[in-house]
Length: 193
Image 1: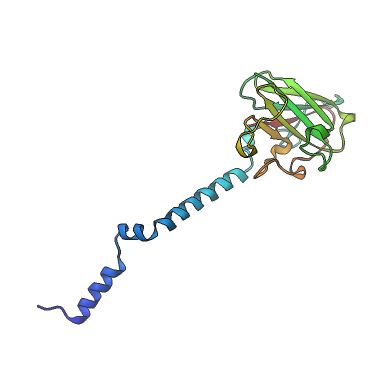
Image 2: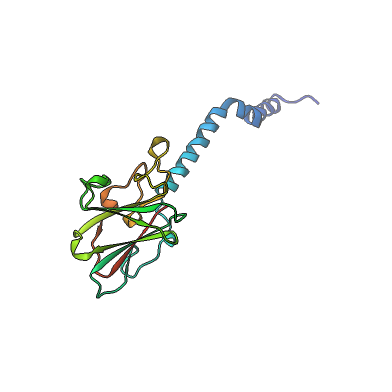
């Protein structure tokens, strides 16, 4: 029995509406690849923008960065933790303003310490600290006195800032790393990674 004109046109429409995956790929593979790269870029940006896991640093009694050690003590302690080995030293800088932030020669204090068990402890007189400051630290693995970087200025040595601050493309802003001076007898935890 011959097909009616309506049946023939429906068959052709149905066939035309369902191209094979090979045809779709041939026509649109550039768009698919571009979308895939876009999704990968978006996921990477989100992962970089996420704050570090609070489980990486000790939780404190004052806030997430500080722990009251001894209320009768007149010192402030900074515990830098996260070194992968005890080779080299941990270098720490304290900045009292945004204008001087992340320029080591302009730091209010610069100290270095040997590493023991993947961490270093720095001690400051509480009376010597400004009311607000930011800390920056890194593990100077090769003891050359500078934070080594790879292509595009990406650090190759572990580093960190107070408040666990991280910048999206470079160091964080002073406002992200700045903290109010804690009371005497306090230890500040600064994780590096």
